[in-house]
Amino acid sequence: MSTTKAPDYKASLNQLESLLDEYLGKKAPEMPENIKETLVSFAPYIAIVEIVLTLPAVFTLLGIGAAMSPFTAFLGASYMMTYGFTYYVGIVVLIGSAILQIMAIPGLFKRTKGAWQLMYYSSLTSFVGTVVQGSLLGGLFGLLIGMYILFQIKEKYR
Image (cartoon, rainbow, N blue to C red; front, side, top):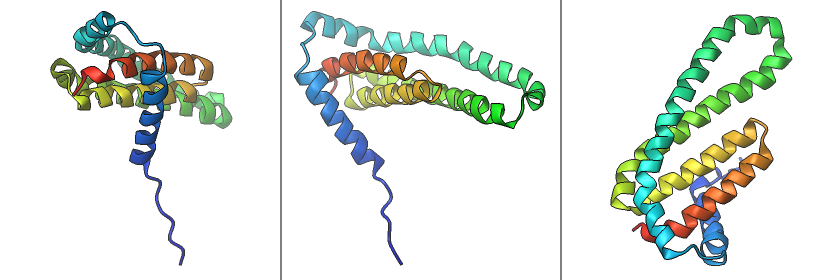
């Protein structure tokens, strides 16, 4: 009997975090201190605004999905396997990312390392959703900018 070890996702995420910290936090051009402080001060409010803007989108997506579901039978199985999959994965990812941001808000006010990590996970989750929905280039561009900002302000969270 062979024993296969399950992938250690936590270790992989930690390795990715170390790699990104090296290149986006230490080797990348450093953001001015006053900008870092301003971003950290406004981070909880930015997260709240993002969540407020995301919730109507989630409700709309769920509503449109529910309204369109009777008509999807006419579209065929292959259409539903591609469009339906990406549509529902997009909703799940959007909700997951919003939940991570909601969980981070109290810690963002207190500037905790855990809150920073939740925002890191939220960014990765958003990237996965963007790629699944077919926008690799846009996802990479957004991820790079978001991660640069996150790793530049990482030192402000303890």
